[in-house]
Image (cartoon, rainbow, N blue to C red; front, side, top):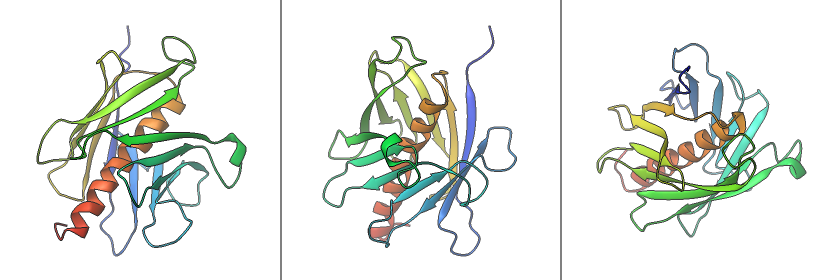
Length: 191
């Protein structure tokens, strides 16, 4: 049986003031997802995910951060191009310390075919941005291991194949947590 594991490399280009993340396949090459970071534009999503090597590629989804809680709202789809086709999910901060976040989503390709399932990101190391994603039964479905640098990135490994929509939701929820941590550290003077 072929392995279902897929790896993705997450990184933040360090050239100038580039306000984005790039995600490529684990084997390298051109980015397959580019993430536009917006912190100061009212009404614009905090993160916009594009399906390609630059920010002109089609929008895969968006993320809005709450100003008053640790929760985030993730939209799978393009809210400008097809607002009615966006699947909105809440990424809830489960603990005061921000080491656990959960979301629920319906997955056609998962066991149970289309039923809503809950997933939880849990920090696996106190000092880093390493996280594991588990399903409702506690099985690990994805792991993110951060690189040594505070803003550099890391490697995401998906252990299941529930379809491209699930892959995008995993990437978007991880990047929302990743960027929320980056913003918190920058606001506290830590990078």
